[in-house]
Length: 339
Image (cartoon, rainbow, N blue to C red; front, side, top):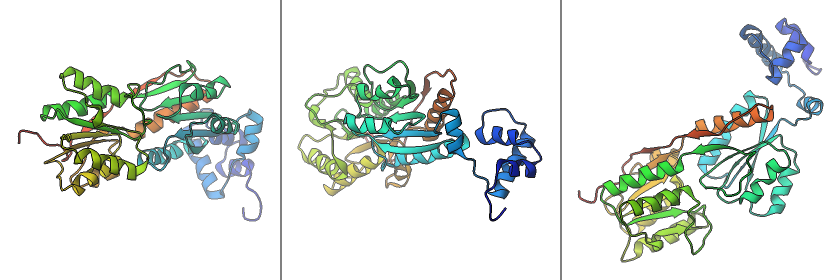
């Protein structure tokens, strides 16, 4: 077909079906038998056919464009989610734009003006009032993250990741190992004098202290660290103190690696002197020496659930919140205090 644009009719002729069947396959909006679908997909591949999604969007008043909004796209956890979502979106005929969150309303208004068909938001930063701007103007919205967001619109659908339960498992593990002086790092939180109990990790951390009558030392909580350098410096200062903790829970694996570096720079050993637990079970957790103990967040399951819920919602289907469990992966960065 060199020299001219491949049309839907060309694909239909090659596959031995009608142009309507080709549309059903490319739009993924009607049932097509497995045999016909495979023939159409093969013809599309052979001919190099590209459906005109702009024209389709004008006809259906859809852009086939989804926004994924998160706090830090450079974080491996989110970067992997991005890759998973791209694959799934492509299967359903959508493309995704990825945006880092900003706290200002002007930035959110700019995103909304892009006329996305829907939005997936994973944030510990944006307040409920800003998140609600999406459903308030009719943009189907899915939300997941680590916070208890207040005053959220009932039109938002949740992918509830059991961060709280994962934190309880991590803390129980440390307590059973004999640790009572446990620190906590969450760089996603705003730096403030009070403890943010709306964060699900903080909630679990505090609850275990209460359950076992342990003193919750506010000096052991690092909030609002600004980048890796800040995490390193604040961790270094914490473990340099005379009353240093014997264990630390860190909000993601990369920051756990930074904390481990700070600990080792003080000639302390992991786990002999300090036990460390991270979150997400990312690649770095598997290759750290020693191997990091971490709360596993099932990334692929989250990606598929969030995207499929959103597309179903865009297409007018009734959807419900979904719950996703977490687990504790025991590595070699925790050790019993009695050994």
